[in-house]
Length: 97
Image 1 (cartoon, rainbow, N blue to C red):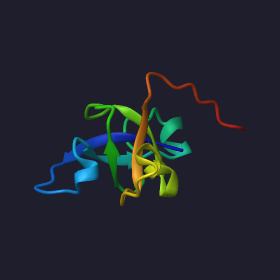
Image 2 (cartoon, one colour):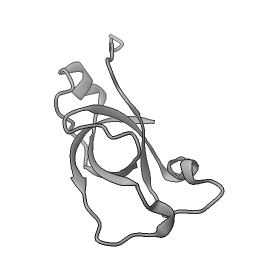
Image 3 (cartoon, helix red, strand yellow):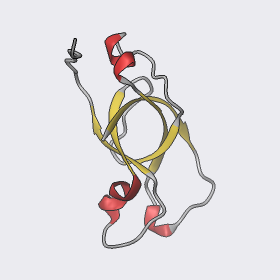
Image 4 (cartoon, rainbow, N blue to C red):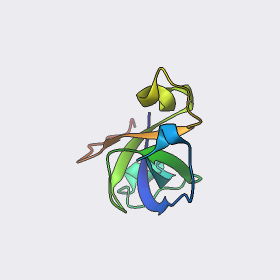
C-alpha cells in the first residue's frame, strides 16, 4: 500500500463492461520526505488509479498497485494496475531519527 494525493480525474470515452461505473483518478504518490514536510504535495511520478470511493482533489488516499489492485473484481480478470483502497482522514508520522 502507498499513500498519495488526488490531483485530478481521467474521463474515458469507452471502456470495458467489467469496469463500468469505475472512476479514474490521477494520484501523486507521497514519500517519507513528503510526509515530514506536511504532505500537501507528493514528489513521485503520477499514477492513474481506478476508484469507487470518490475522494476529491487534494485529498490523501491509500492505493494498491500490481496484482492486488485487481482484487475488487475477483474472480474476473481486469486490466487495472492501481486501485484507491482508502481515503485518509488524518495521519501521524514520526520518522526514525
